[in-house]
Image (cartoon, rainbow, N blue to C red):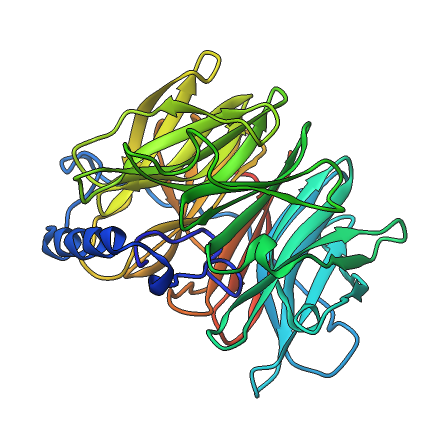
Length: 412
């Protein structure tokens, strides 16, 4: 569905199969779209406040070497800071539309090498890697390629071998696909192991693994899945003190707009709902990170963007700053959220394209960030962020070239 998009917007990031969804979801979509199209353009911040000057990081372009194999355009989709290394993942595409998986690593952000890829399946050989996470110095990934009679994503996870190469983890088709598939959104890592967030026709779902060698699906789980109260949708998750915290939204029965919702779990199998305050507008949480150990989520607030922060032990949430300008064109979404140094950075998209934002107070207020290049929106275009203690990594794919930039964390 149009408004229920995972942050993984590119190959494998969503299924968006209307035929697999209930008629009630389609009706809700049409009603919601009508609300969106009649919304007036406005700012989510104080309309009388003077805008702050944009932050201008000292962006430096970095060069990714062509991976072994036939030449083609580099596709970049996601990035992560992993122990003392950086990773960028994506693929290589040729003029005929054929793709193959690719990943790059760097010890310093300046010098990059291609990571050997070991696909095992027909579709794995054609994957574009779209989500990467790190745990104990090891990375794991998600990749997908559309195919088959309905052109649905054929998704697999990937794991890192002792020699540093990445290998596809083959899985039964219905683990990630099948008649109940909707999307496989993001892979995250933490103390409990590895967790994949996503959705099935029955609502929010999770996939869990202790070591990334094999994932088990959790669908139809009480509290996590849709029920008589409404339809759930899961976007992202983070490990907080050894417990998973997932964020998303809830379309209450009889309503046409979502409210934000969060869940906690010790094992990724048994979940408890955590209420999140909603406004009178369409709200949902799309990305979440820890800022000084406190969960901060960013998502849609009407046609612009909002911030929510968990207080205390994470059992209570409060709304904080809204940011961005509401638009009547395009579908807004949060494409990236990371912490670099002491600051929180977000990447968003709307009818005007992608934009970057920075918060120096844990999401309490936001300033725009000047990007190093134009960042248009639309199909096959991507923006992703990764942060370390001192630097910010930006991945931009404008459907013509994949580019990577590095900058020191700076508030100037």
